[in-house]
Length: 184
Image 1: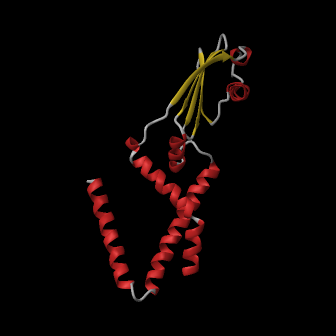
Image 2: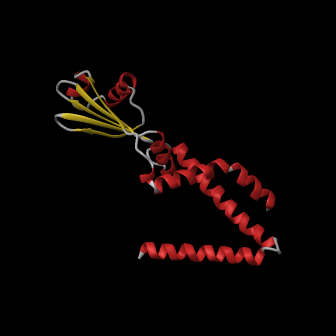
Image 3: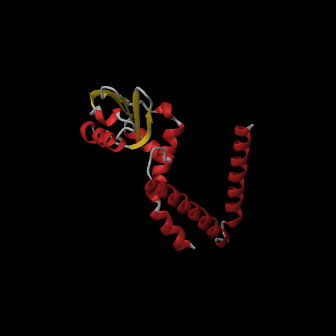
């Protein structure tokens, strides 16, 4: 159990550090000065991609990516009689394209919130892909195993078992009390 606890702890050291630091920055957003950078661009989408029936979504998205440097996943592609709206989202990033269907006129607004906002979004799994979801799940499983093997080790260490279990019980009581106070 000691071997498993030690190597799981070493394996997840950077995971714990990442989620600890970003947990603090999420909880205390007022500590951080924002670095929102917003830009606007205009351009043109071929009107024939928009005018006849269903717009050519793939071509529009790829043009926005290649010519305007848009990144992130397509969050929404909305179509009405006058306009198409395409929204892209990524960690710490968003881009919204508004395209007039009759003329192909494009107005693009890009918002980049900076590295810290991107890291905070990674912490929450917001605007990320399936592979990052796996990172979060694996981190949770490894941290659970570390906690359980640490608790298991406590039962084998006779000198500190009683004191350790009292500290664990005290932590559980504090957690319960704070949760109770928060929930009302």
